[in-house]
Image: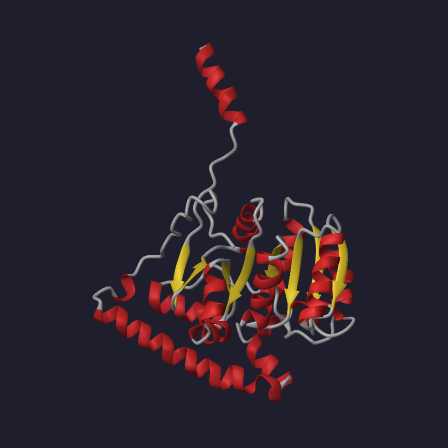
Length: 292
């Protein structure tokens, strides 16, 4: 009886074993398959480590860019990748037999993560045009007041200005940087200035600052529910986005069709199973999650 009680006390002292996140291969990239609630917990676990960690998002546009940009592909492969948009959901359905549990686009997920996170971060925002990052920080402070928001800077940076921003980040002891510069610039900037030199964790948040600052309108909720926000964005900014969505989506679907044909020829078809992440090299980290 005493032995059982002692075992129970010891078990209560031991930290829970973290489950491996389920990943799905989407045209060469391992993408998290999770609900929003699960994603928040996994992001928290991923940012627990003392080493800098990078969180990114994969949509059809980023997938196309990475298919011809080896540097971007390498950066994505060293990050925790979340699914963004209907294109990668179609890819999941075709290649793995089911859609992603939920759309984890950054505009919705990042504020939710900051609100629900068990961490209390010191947050610095870098990106968008002059003044927008500061307005985005003000909005995030209202949404997730438990964090300390230590700085903001626009994202149109020269190398010299980037070094100055990095020094400001270090001086203010920021430990989570939100980077909103668009792909592939935001991922490359985060890797160069934060992962390699700054030792700070980062989330690449795309157009988040523009939307939460109300610089740009978001699609109505019913449009988002139909997974058609890209159509709304195309209507609002046709000159800037027509090539990304009209040409880019067609290219993505051609790439997806080619991948599906390869699956059929390999004899797997729609029975392909979701993959699980490979353990990281011992000399890099003991974490079960991919490391930056």
